[in-house]
Image (cartoon, rainbow over all chains, first blue to last red; front, top):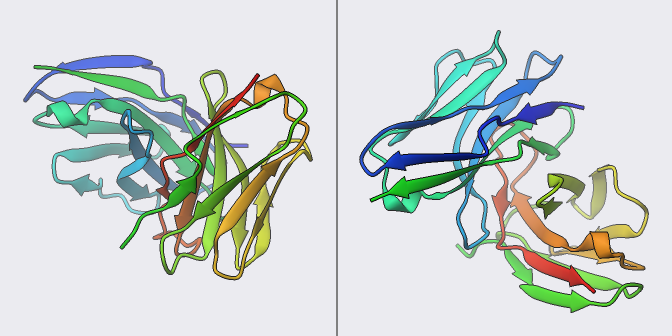
Length: 115
Length: 114
């Protein structure tokens, strides 16, 4: 089974600053999909950004961007101009094209935004 | 468009009892997946249903079961509850299982087993 590792249990960032959350994964597949989800205290998991492994270009969604390094099996999330509403648990997730909607999640990084 | 709706939001049960959780997917979504979230194990995949058929199952005992109805609504059942079943159970729906079908999650059901 694929494994996803988030080595930073907690991170903090000053409001308006930039923070990067790390994620590595282990797989023998060449084609797969990677996601970052955000879980605020409301408990609902919200999709932040996604990346297809066959695309070399890094995905970007407004203030959120990723640094996808396929050879290194690394998928970090950069949040620019951090806002108070960005405070949440962030989960990195891996999805194989062969197992439907079975996602493999990392253990999460708790992000605190300091005013 | 309404999001994924899970009921109830909170549930307290006694060891040995059984419980049924409900999930209504986003309109038009035919795939429903269930995940268990605990502080120790994180998010773990339980199973996925698509068009009333179980497509995939995670590594959980047979006490965990589910089903999907013709309107795509899904229920998850846990029998003979154990203390370790206390968790947040998340339901997620998607239009399909292709590469451009991300999961859309509900708010979860918090199950406490005493």
